[in-house]
Amino acid sequence: MKTVKILFLVKLMLLTSIGSSQKTSFYDFKVKTLEGQTFDFASLKGKKVMIVNTASKCGNTPQYKDLEELFEKYGNDNFVIIGFPANNFANQEPGTAAEIRSFCTASYGVTFPMMEKISVKGDDMHPLYKWLTMKSENGVLDSEVKWNFQKYLIDEKGKLVEVIAPKDKPTSEKIGAWLSTK
Image (tube, rainbow, N blue to C red; front, side, top):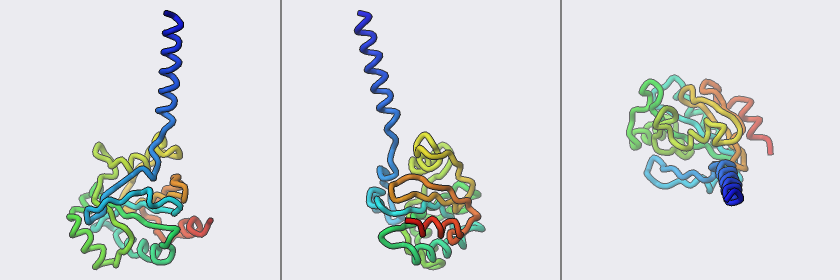
């Protein structure tokens, strides 16, 4: 009887350690575009990725221009920017998907992928942002989304590399240096 209990405990410990060591990979996420199409992050393997939460009525909204310039300069087979409209800060992204698309295209000529509006903090935080902000999920660091246009840099292997503050422009030297490294 004692041997059975010990074997059960050993099996339980093994299963627990296996389960806890398995983190969701960046490449496991699937999201919807503004147009409602499925976007599979597995298609991003081998690319550097910048994830940014966006808003149309924010003091940082002109960063759309910088993001588009960065995407035009570096966006090819090795780099992509993915925008996630979010209405978490002072109701600065109240629009519908169609309104957001129209604003981004007409005002800033945005051609980088824009996803559906999500929540980037709080009880209804999207699972991707849980991964981005929780060390227990991403294996690298904890962070908090402080405002619109916070940037998360992901390397070619799907590892979170750095968090860039909302006020820091996408065209900063730090981001340029990261994009220039192999």
